[in-house]
Length: 130
Image 1 (cartoon, rainbow, N blue to C red):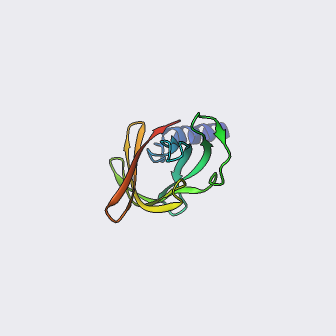
Image 2: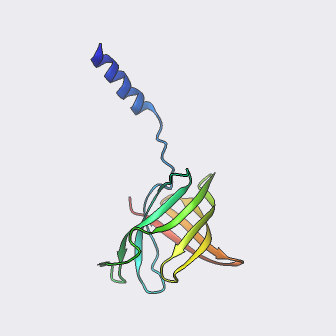
Image 3: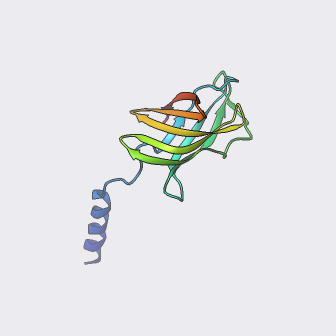
């Protein structure tokens, strides 16, 4: 009887659709003003919104480099709007040491990310790593 209950529980878990947001995963940024780029892990934060932190940094030649920003939040407070749209978030740009109002748009294996101050915006497309 116990084996039957365990098997039923496992089947129920496998049949449950994934609760992960489509933007979850590891994303490679475009090179910044210095030619450096990074890997940002996107996930759901404790407040239920989408956030992402820098997990690795790379120099212009693609070699790993040390960065004081590893572990730092890069995007946070993104509110999923459906259809791959995220709004009302914030983004930190390490190359400019500035934080901006932000939004994101998921397009398959690319993530359009923009940061704005007033009407001046800066946009990038990040590529899914995994």
